[in-house]
Length: 196
Image (tube, rainbow, N blue to C red; front, side, top):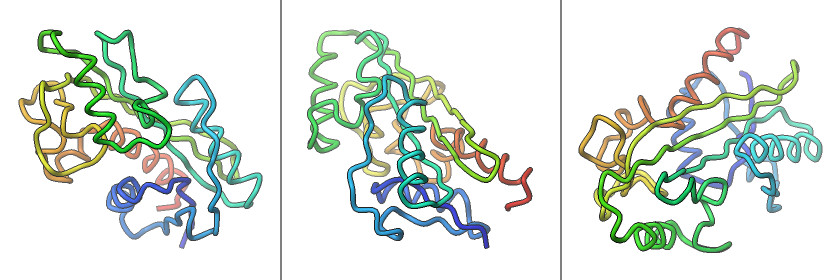
């Protein structure tokens, strides 16, 4: 069975990706390859950060791997938090801290507060490096709603819906989320390479 390292320590992301890829490919975590270091994310774009992560793992551990970087761009905030999405409220912040800061920044701004959620996946394999991108348009709710998902899911309402990602079941969310779209492109590529 094909093995690929997913360069993340985020258990929620790992679970989501494994659910989407099924059992045709074995996904290893950073923990599985004894990578306990903090992987740098110092680029100015999602693509740059995703590529930086796969380069780090491949150069240091020699495994084919993929990594993602996700950004939330809110129109009323000039595209913020962008590449700082995961650490919007500070380096060691929790997701709730990020949501609290985001809602505070948007106080007084009328709905719909347009936003776009984007995920870029970078993959390195025997054929080199590849990028897969998924975007979903939506808006930011006025308050948290729902208990599923993670990150900004409780405040992100995808276009055409009146519920947040956190109010959807996993299959529904994965079928149309930014990460779901990027993973679908990754899966399509792996299918074409006869790896799935």
